Image 1 (tube, helix red, strand yellow):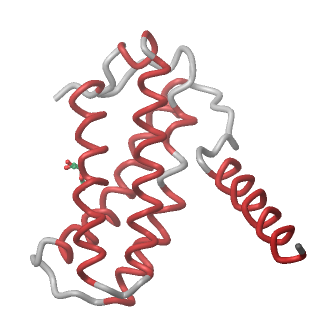
Image 2 (spheres, protein in one colour; image 1 turned 135 degrees about the vertical axis):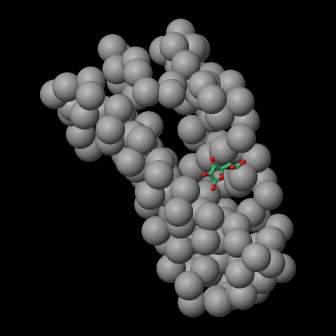
Length: 153
Ligand code: ASC
């Protein structure tokens, strides 16, 4: 009984934490230009950490478990940041206007990416290259799906 109560509490706590960190909403941008710059830079920094994991997953760089773990942790946090900078009236950059016309679809892509980034970080934490490899492809696929739908070349 006691164990069951604890388990329920643990699940509820996990759900609350996941919900709270799924997408950051910490900033209000004064200028559209700042929102565009913020999301471009957040996505760029993210791509560097993601790229480091990809290089190890694809054998282009030697696997370093500690580095993978650190990059996974950074990625997991960064993954939540860009989406708050796609607020109403911030059309610009390479982003297609469809983002604001199909906001629910865009938000779905962002959520999928955050989920996969979390799984990739968890895989990186194991120190097992096979798990990193398995998690990388699905995460990269969520990048691509959103870019194909919502980013101009
Ligand atoms: C990256 C990066 C992207 C994605 C994409 C995945 O590292 O900069 O845009 O991964 O290439 O398909």
